[in-house]
Amino acid sequence: MSGRIRTLLIFVVPSLYLAATLLYSAWQAVWGVQVDPESAYTMNGLVAAAGYGSLKFDHPGTTTTLLVELIVRGWALVSGAEDIVAFGLKHYDAITWAARTGEALVLTGALLAGGLIIGRTTRSAIAAMLFQAGAFVHPDAFHYQMVLAPEGLMAAFALFGMAMVVKAALDEQAPSTSLGVVSGVIFALGFSTKYLYLPQALFAVCLLRNRRALVASMITGAVGFVAFSLIFNPGTITRGFGWLAQIATHKGQYGEGEAGFIDFGTFWSNMREIVASAPLVPGVYVAAASTALAWSIKSRSRQDPVSLTLGAAVLIYGTHLVATSKHFALHYMLVPWVQTGGVLVLVVVLLRRLVPAIWRAAPSLLAGSLCVVTGAVTLIDARAAALQSSALNAIGARLSKAVVAAGPACANVSGMFVRAPENDMNHGWDMTLQLWGDRAMRERFSAAYASDFTVPLLDHNIYTHVLKYDFRPYSYAKLATDYPCIVVRSSVALDSENAIGLLALKLDHCEIEGVHVYTVGLACAKVRDSFLAER
Image (cartoon, rainbow, N blue to C red; front, top):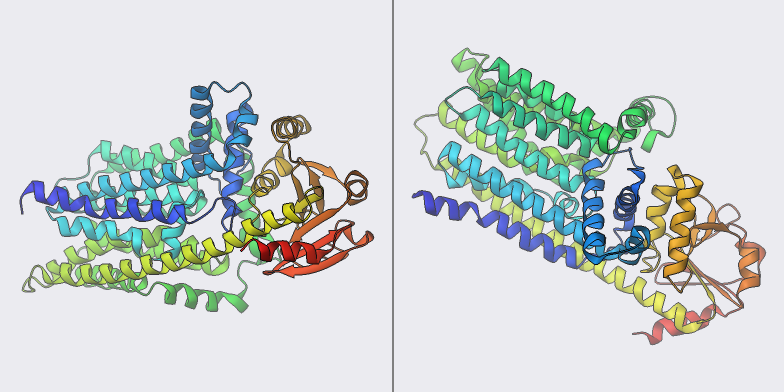
């Protein structure tokens, strides 16, 4: 196969990924189902662009915040905005869309650059495409690579880092010191994106043939992470590791619940669900462990870079499996998922060494067929999820219009998870300024919203038990004197604990498409009739 044809083939998967992810993004309204966590990073990026630095350290998401900050600063500069806070709030949703697109472009670049590296190292376009198939091994991986969350950029760093690992393991020459430096930089960026990237440090075994490269990688990775964090997100160093310790020493989510590391009541069932959700992935890692062990026994060598790298990959997968089974959310497996293709390339190489008589193309064709089937299933599942979330978001938007039509003079209050287009900024506020902002910062954002928007932003927060008016704390008693009627939308039924004083008023209640609607001074049936008329 000529070099030109090989290069063209390597462009196929990144092009497919970019087209698929942008189409998928178009079906995912930023104010809808995915408002958590996207709004948190949009708001945090705006906070940083306003000169306050990052207020989030809990993932830590430093590179994600920086991406949003660059978008806000660049766009505001081109537009000549006088107040960057008002500008950011006015274009809040568009900033999220732009950041999603930025993440998609970065990951597409990682797929392309990684594919070219693998293709050049193995002299095989099939190997390069196997590596790139990691982006499609699971619907959750595909989803979180797109949305504005740390996982998007983490996947890009993991993929490009894996390409460096495969190159170091397969090159006939020992890894260069410059390769060690590049690997360290990638690790520093990946770890700054999400703490779950830490097990990637085990891949340093691929550099053992050149101790200088190994040392350079370790120094660059450690110093790079600390320096990058201190410049862009100091809370990562000063508070983030304390948050991790809290999680590690408590059985519940986010450091909650009783003391202890693992709740065995859910641990094993979580692990079974993880394994069953992406059967190709554990199969590849079992094959990695088996071939690495077989080669070590056959060659009687413990210094082989390929088998050492596969062993590290298996340990990384196991670490993520245990961590995710404890602190359960399927997408926490994203790093070993997207690196499955790179691991598969090394398995195929080692399998050919173990069985030289095997038809050379057979392992690649088998692996390629499995990847094609898995990728097709992922895209089919992703399409179904996109259609489902689009339908839910359409209901939320329709209900928002119905509320305004039924009570144009009413106070329009909404909360999380009712998919109200006008409410998405509140989640970002709650996850940044509400938790870690000072009074002056909060007042600046509140005043900017009030001066730039004619319709007040009213939020009923069932978690913090606070009613907000343009981000400021408020009360239903005062709201009842300000407006002739009130309409409140909630994702859950309200009670004395989460009603924030609303139950003290004379209420009417109805449920519309799973959303609880409470009205004061207006019949709830009028909102329902307005909703039905919006069809």
